[in-house]
Image 1 (cartoon, rainbow, N blue to C red):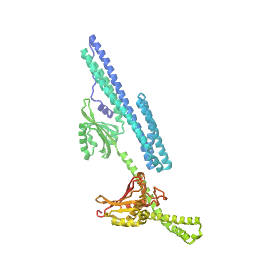
Image 2: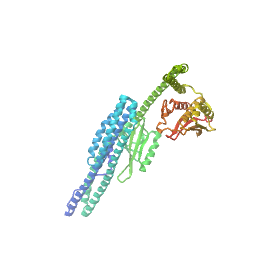
Image 3: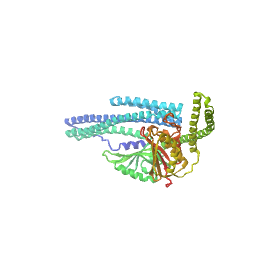
Image 4: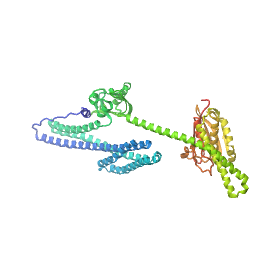
Length: 593
């Protein structure tokens, strides 16, 4: 019953005419009959041949879609495996790769007579092979070397570029088939009406109604046979589609209901056909059907409309709907075809993937916390022996310096210098660790007073470099911790002086970005920072220059970022190489807190 309903929905406009028995005809009439039959047969053969070519175009387009779907499935499975390491995500990858070559061979077998498509296929094959190799490589690397090694391959964007080439080539081949489709449809229509005009002219000349009826009967029989084959083919496609496909009239009455619709909504075709489509629409969404019908009557197509529908057992199902108007032979809109895709599997997959990503992120955060605690503990334990080494080396120079030769004196001085550098590094590490673990008291803090104290803390660097530091007289009061803010701005001022060039000039001012936020700027005219490094410099031990050129521990900006984040603010930089840097700090204003 279901297949019959689908076939009738596709072909319910035509009737077959049965020719009457031909009686006695004059010689001209007989000639006219034969001429009409011959012309009609030739015309219908051309129409049929054109329909065959149009069907061939659709087969090529379907093969192209199958290829792109297979590559996309393979890439989706690869991504799931790369992120989770779960081999079950390789199932779509393996199925996709298995279908790719079959799709390529099908395309090749369908397009040998089209030089343009053959050339594009020859360009498409290497790109597909390259994509398959990239997928195999990343999967193998993920298995043997882990997530980060595979991620480095993905971040090269080579796979993305290859996928873009594949999509572009498949798109070009689709457009070529669309051009052929347009041309052949035009030819089919022209030949169809030419056949009618020819038959009519010859029939009028013959002046024999019986010959006209016979000619029209033969023509309609041929057309009906062609339409029946097409209708059966379309009905089979609809019936075995994975998506629910439903036909309805403009009164919302269901006229066709495929097997996927039965599985999705729980109604059999016998139960659904003849009922209103509203049986699957929840009560609070009935208005959607009225809106859809209004748009259909205007000739609009509705695509990717995500909503909820209701199964026979009352379950709510998330679906994506595509609704298109159906027209009769005269172009009048008589109904609609609806495709409903179940979004539940996609939602479940996304939820599962998001959960795994969340778990992995939590693990990484916990590992980072343990690592910070370990570094804090090690740094603290190193201070005592380091100070002993520094003191002994300093005593050696002071008490026994006269007994040491030049080499021994140099070695002892190096111990003192290295111990001093190491002590600074450990102090920075301890400061960074304290920012991660110590409870911070938050209160209103005068930024002008903080900047004065910070400038005093780096006075030796300012005097040694001859820097000029201009701090705006009016700075806002913010919510923060005075000690942390002095530490933050001391590091930023020290950096501005250190990297400010031969004649450092530093300017500090504040702006109000929003009613509740103050933004403080520290600007220098020094060497600047390349855009590629502007995020990296806020990491621990991240240095862009050697200590022999610009001394330091590589922790200062990490302390700045950690301190500001602990205070609920943000920090960043705007810079270009050779044109100075502008560091900014955002903090909540005290009067807005």
